[in-house]
Length: 161
Image 1 (cartoon, rainbow, N blue to C red):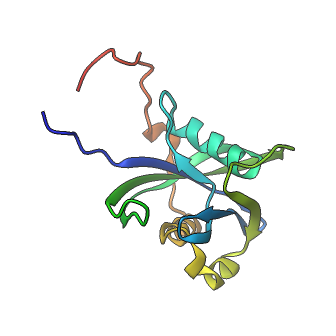
Image 2: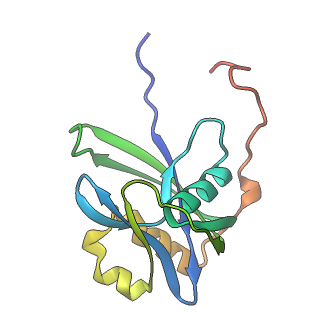
Image 3: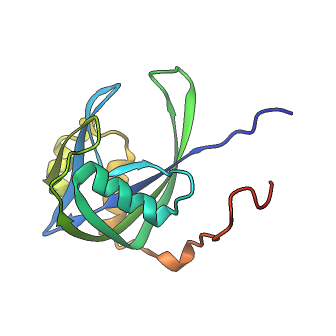
């Protein structure tokens, strides 16, 4: 049987407060970059749980998703492996909560608030073109209700295929 191809599923939080957006400055294989609080979906986790977890891990802020801004698919040539990787990103907006005193994820230098104009000024330092696209979709009012996402409470291995 041949290997089944699967995209990397990621989540991102578009967090706006007083005209500024919450970003992380992080070390990557391509140097220091800016991104939304974002990361991979973990096993046994819903998309909503993943975006709250990633936001806490990367910014030390609580986050409660209220809507989905969009679903994005993109392909990159990995500088580490020299292989093409496909990412399927689910971006959510919501309410930022309390900031906790806790260390940030490894590789995260700091959490920073920026206006759209400040983000544009450092666009060459964005982790991907999706950083601006998600903010622009958010500012355009693009929203889908969370009820659009259904997570079945199944047991792992209960079905195949």
